[in-house]
Image (cartoon, rainbow, N blue to C red; front, side):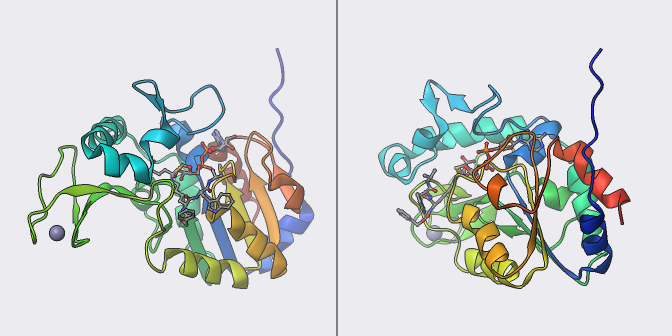
Length: 246
Ligand code: BJW
Ligand code: ZN
């Protein structure tokens, strides 16, 4: 039977974890994979809905063309997420906010699992599936499993408060993330294919500012070559190992 190898955390990373104050964690869909949330790309588990690839249905054009179809897609996704719980990777990261003087968590995920695990001040680059936004006045409201009807202010149509392809990120979100990246000493990149911009540019900002980059992912990504340390494996297994190393 094959023996599962645990990735080795270098002495350098251990030192940096013990001495570092300014830490950034950037997460993507892979961190929620062990909670049962499908990722977008790779792993044979990519999201396709009614024969449409996710980048077609999750696009600015589709909101213009067929908002009902977009809602149906997000109803399906909210339903998938309704019983999902944070995994040890979310929990480990939540504990880091009290271990480092300056800790920043930036996520591309819309599932809210970091907050469920206890993380505060999460920078959500791509919005949140549990919120809806008015297509006219921009007012947002929380949404549960059911679909909210109309804007409570102007009565116009709501849409999911998520960032689709071809749409701008929420005002200030990337700027906040870039500021954390530009001032961090240690940057963890967890469970992202690093294909979607501008999120994928954050580790490059951190690297240019002199940070030590560490990637946690079972697969290689376009950022792997840039990283100082690569810990191959599942986030739910590797993150707790990192937590035990300092
Ligand atoms: C595990 C694991 C385990 C598995 N443990 N790991 C520069 C160059 C080229 C294009 C652009 C550019 N700048 C902007 C663009 C356009 C576009 C873009 O980036 N396109 C590229 C794909 C080519 N970007 C945008 O449109 C953005 N807007 C923007 O830039 O505005 C300005 C603008 C406006 C108009 C025109 C042009 C520019 C917005 C991007 C919004 C992305 N939205 C989505 C959908 C959200 C809603 C929904 O959920 O439907 O966000 S797309 C999707 O991808 C989702 C994710 O947040 C995002 C990133 O995916 P992520 O998280 O990396 O997941 P995966 O599935 O790709 O990877 C999972 C990884 O986990 C893998 O590596 C696995 O190996 C790993 N893994 N199990 C650890 N257990
Ligand atoms: Zn409104």
